[in-house]
Image 1: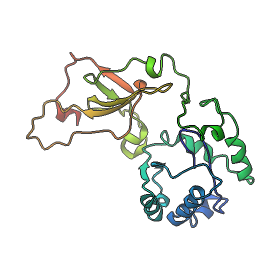
Image 2: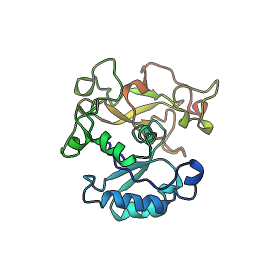
Image 3: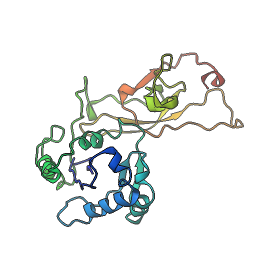
Image 4: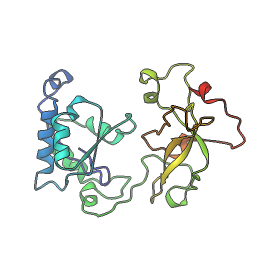
Length: 237
């Protein structure tokens, strides 16, 4: 378990040492009990979150969903490994002396925060540097795209058929979008949420406008000039 803001980690071994062993242990009931142990531990500074980001494994359904609902926690399924980066990287740290390793990590200064997770979890707000160096201004100094610009977004393998890229697959979304919402915060790239622009469609058309669920940073968006002649909607489909 990783708190995204403070990077504070909490782990509980579930008694499996291989993928084969985990198949009968990694159930929603097991995960629910583990989460209760973490969040109900008086010595653990973590509190029940507002949002829990998980992968799409079945262990986060059933009892786990029921427990989260009881505590008013919304579960968000990650769209890709990119979204789960913080947790996935930490999962490879499993060793025999798990609790010692986790304690050491929590007391170590992180590059993104400049302080340790133990200190960060005590703060009301923390400001994190991006996990990768960016060529250009960031945060409040970054130039913000206006809501009326037209864009395409960069496609990840998860967006493609069968979740993998093939020769000839598009690099950018076939549909055109405008910026529905954006969020700017200190020391972080501006985040954008998109809504499709249904060119050539009337109110009578039986067409569902697309809203990608994930957010995007500027590098993942291609701005389309206003004077670009776009193909009909049926061609883009």
